Amino acid sequence: MDIVEQAFFKGKDVTARLSALKIPLNYRATKFDEAVKKAPKAERDKLVAEGLLRDDSAEGAHFYTAQWSLRTSVTRMQTFPAKASVVVEHEYVPLLGGSVGGGLTASQRQNDWFKNKQRKYCIDKEWIASFDKRMQKTGNRDTYGEIWLGYVLTTGANWKGPIGDFRLVVDKGAPDTLVSFCAEGVKKISPTQFEVRYKDFTPKKDLDILIVQWPL
Image (cartoon, rainbow, N blue to C red; front, side, top):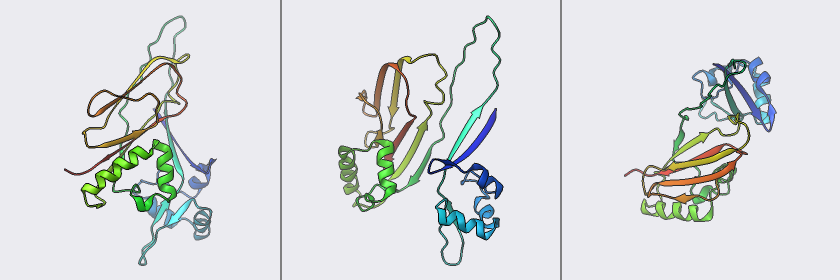
């Protein structure tokens, strides 16, 4: 397998620029902050001024947060013998992301962070009302946790033509957990499961799922 990482900021590929400064493209790398501090101050200041980096320094300690998006592609070479059929199957377990708390409370809903999340996961008014109702049970304490699940549908579309019979089942885990994702024709098939079925389906975007849960 060949792993290729690319960094994008405002639609522009900034991979070469960051690599030249020896800054890891993966901002979750253990030595990310150390690498940023080692970069020439003039170049680091430019990254901050242009918005690629956010300076989160406090009390004399310097910390930086990356503002670019990381795209990771995994590829391999495959030989297809002449005049023979080859079966190609794709199966993988997505890597979960998440946070304790987040920007979903009423006081955060004018921020770009919430608006971006609202678009990404198709959060509607009914979902927000359910979230607020659940928060009231906790006394509006910020005790919820978020789970982010991404599943690639577009770049894996190496089949010929549309998917004849597409079936998606999303299981939110517990009845009192909230889930939101972008899809049409969603049908609830159990207290925790939601189903989507399409005929002759051609994915136009990847699948992003938000799950919000509270401690028992």
